[in-house]
Length: 248
Image (cartoon, rainbow, N blue to C red):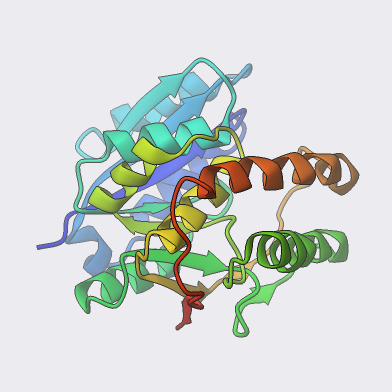
């Protein structure tokens, strides 16, 4: 029987997290509600009222919402903490401004059918609808096609964003990962691929509802460091024959 956890990292989200999370929970369909055991919000290093807002959500949904907090603002450490805290058999990692119940529903169905151990919501899936600004879409294409595919041999189309994972797999990946911060989300996908874990990619529909906190030009220098860190991580495990994650 599936028991499901949803993880939401939260950094400086005081102005919108209560409304977004409450609306998401209240509109969940029965097929999700029937298996959902917890929504874990991981506040990380916020300097506004995010921590207090998360506590109010705990009080509003006492049997469902569980809050964790870490002192440093780090997306990677936040989702790692959420995965390690998860009590479900399976989990989804969502974004505060991308609480996609359709992705969760699809993931649950795929897990039930035994189609995957790790599911990536790919912005570059042929059926995805990506309404982000052109610069953001080009950076995604450059990062995944050039740096990950050419430099590291990864055959998938995306590693950032929404993910669903068997919890036992997620915790194992947390144990062996060596990176932190934003690159961690890419490392766990690449480690899963290198270890032969079954990965499926599914389409998503994404619209950027606010400006990113880091500009495209500020991200580019970090990419080279990211590739070096990922190469160090993958060197610990023997190469398997390339296998393209299935595009569902």
